[in-house]
Length: 161
Image 1 (cartoon, rainbow, N blue to C red):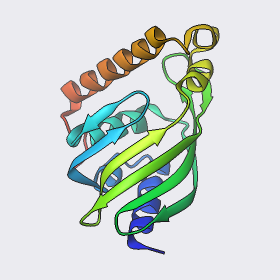
Image 2: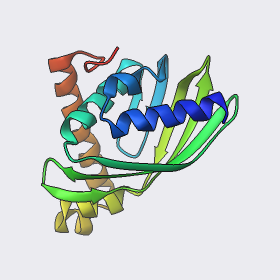
Image 3: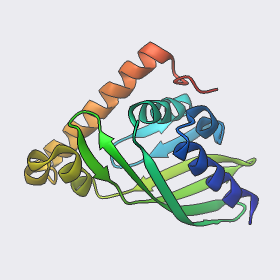
Image 4: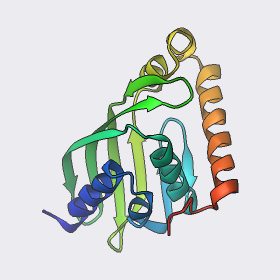
């Protein structure tokens, strides 16, 4: 297995253990992260994972189809958890793409259907409105607010190195 594929495996194994510090250590200091909710850089990435690990008390995670070479990689992963704001169960289906530099993740993009997620996490409100730009932007604002509050309490690294 390529070293970068092993890095992806270590990253998801740390997530399955809810070990945000080990997850953050997989990223380059100036790494970027993007998904349908967040666009982050540097230590904000570790803070986001720390927040999600802390809130994901019942998190179960599966990953597969890990592929990587010297420059890029990919994986498919599926977390199952209870969305803390509503108490509703979520089973997200995510495809990840990675860029690597010096043995660490330099860029990470997660792709998933935000409307599908909003139907599970928010219920009827998410099903009816989750596809609208206004609802997507509201989810992004709320998530950013939660991350900013976490960083204010725990620091930019969110308890990770």
